[in-house]
Image 1 (tube, rainbow, N blue to C red):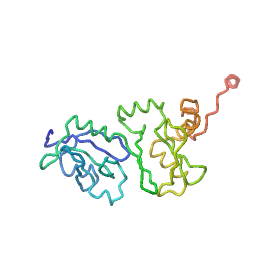
Image 2 (cartoon, rainbow, N blue to C red):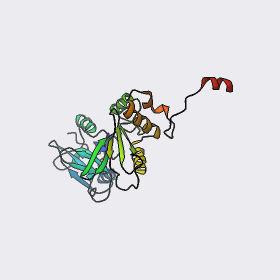
Image 3 (cartoon, helix red, strand yellow):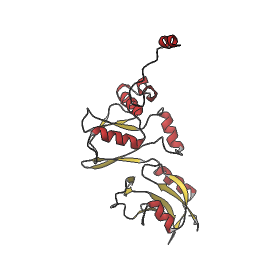
Image 4 (cartoon, one colour):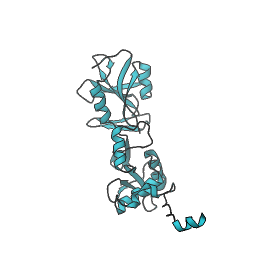
Length: 237
């Protein structure tokens, strides 16, 4: 461990954001600001590191953030730092990169009757997208990981995942009245446009290498852009 008095090298993990390595002031005020309130510590791993989270995240309605495998789900922002016998300290470079990769992608949580599931996703709107995410987005030719649509105009949803044929049925999520309203809200959270949604739906039905799976073929309303007519363009000139 590298113990610093004034700065801590930590991994910040926030709902809907990529995890990132940063330095923060080693003061109680700065630590509380990072998690949005009083702090609490969790020790899910054997090595001398800990998760510093909001002490009231279970009761104050903070959005779900990440699941720590074999431990629990955390809501609200948290950071990971090293620990000594009686204080916080900086992560090593190796630790910082390892925990950044562990929590790299934001996670979307979906409610079901028997609990919830979570799905990691990429968001092209965010600044400083990690190299790994940029490479994934490039391989998908600009398409998102997933998108949602209302099923047959009803209250259930269809979840489309890039590279997979067909869709997964998803129940209407709490707080929404209609499937269309819910799908639009989830797509907005993921940074999915109507053009993306149309391309994803056609890709899941017709194949991901077909022209219909290209989002540039659709307008902002999600409808296909009419093909240009060279003869008509020449007449107008």
